[in-house]
Image (cartoon, rainbow, N blue to C red; front, side, top):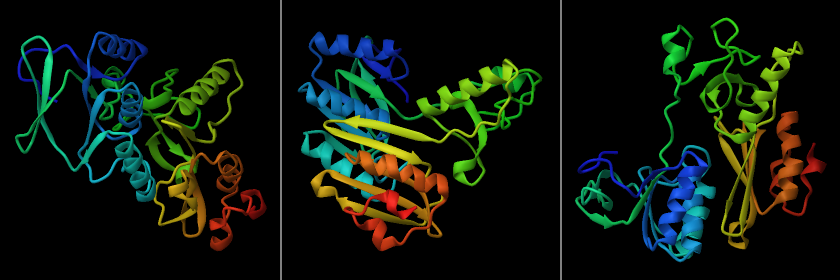
Length: 293
């Protein structure tokens, strides 16, 4: 993103606890108009918190729907509706031209169509570029991040990489080499490396799981839906308690569970087993998923 002027106060790239504390200090000081750029989990969670605090929140997403990179359309549509119901001015298919300011502080966000949205603070949650430059310059293999083997080792002797920057062949995505951006992945990779350094070398096989809390909605995700060709919905999104199950050639790849803890706990077993359950039974909310193993 470009700014019309020098670096502007009030612009926040959400990366650390300090970033959040700085933003909340501005809210406490009287900030009321906030624009959130990016409709991924960071942007949606920020919008939920700020709207609950009574701020005027506008959320901008360049793609046709929020969560487009990580979720199917049913979940995207549900969260778009929820945020709008809570007063968020959520806009999709919107391009940002630049941020405007008075030379000291951000004052607005200019869109590609020329509209300027007033803003006392702007949160930028548009993804990351892995900071692996020094490793690549040192000769480590990598394109999107740095490549690691099944023990989280880079191609450089005695150098490991973990977390968002590490690209590995993921067993739960058909062996696709990818980066998995989650707390679970970073923690479990760290454990794998620590054991290897201590002489207990074992391949990284941790099960991927994710979560997001927005308003009174608890989203829990089991598995990775990469390459899915079908979805099954358990329950009714209008009841604000449902699951979206992702399948490929009939096999369960992943689940997104909204206020459906039992589905999450039992459904991950379907993913681990590579189960191919009956679709009618899968869609029956009253049928426990553990019965479909």
